[in-house]
Length: 294
Ligand code: NDP
Image (cartoon, rainbow, N blue to C red; front, side, top):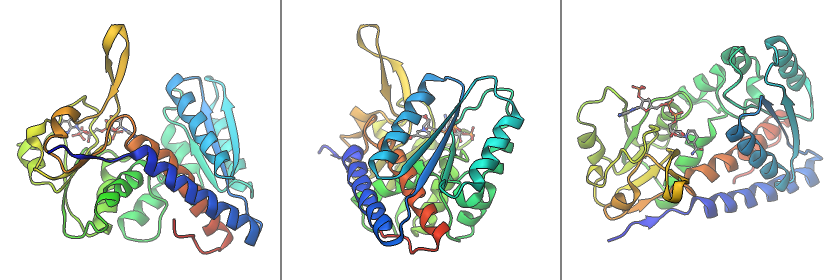
């Protein structure tokens, strides 16, 4: 039997609609308009596309978007000064510094300079620590979106066996924390994991965040499992063109899995939706307004 295809685009669109409604309500009742500042240094084409989609999503949600485009030769001092200004700006509730930064920049120092209350990427050590200790936190957007996709299939993840392949600070580790908070039983796998296929076959929920095109084969998947493919890999396609594939061999996997996300159209759109969700949360927390349930 073929798996249910989890339509990340539609789920993200629905989430964005709810965020827009909550934003309108926030404006009417509290006079508060959430604002997101996006900082882009240099002209990496992939980053430019990503930043444009974020700004568009912010505006569509009824929020304010503040774009800061800096030259590739920006200095550390200039970037730090901009972050300090944005930290102090009352109209800015979320700050997002697009990675990768130019090589002369100490990225960690820049990310750590962001006010944790405005850290909508959830990369600041304060948010990392809060998430790990079960305190309210701004959590990274791709893991947030991935868990929401799993919950679109299973209303409760409690007691489920989840396997996460990948232990990066951006995806794998925060995903593990979010799954633990959902009471899943979590295994985290990485490049040194032995018998990875066997580990994956135990999973009711399999998350692949590796960055290796179609590494997870159909016979690694437990029949009926839910598969969330975080990977985005550009590979050669037809007629000299390129195409995007995930970390899971989709054609094989969809014949075994119960539900699976496609690439593109799965986790990607949810990441953007969760950026605006975090901006809404940050704005509410900053104003002492209860967070809407979206
Ligand atoms: P990283 O390169 O930071 O981490 C990759 C992880 O995969 C590492 O933990 C690594 O293990 C592990 N790994 C590498 N090779 C293997 C292997 N052969 N077997 C098992 N594990 C392996 O990547 P990211 O976490 O940043 O991103 C992962 C993927 O997700 C990429 O394709 C990226 O493009 C995509 N992505 C998608 C987003 C979206 O919006 N959909 C957003 C962010 C990322 P080790 O730690 O041992 O080296």
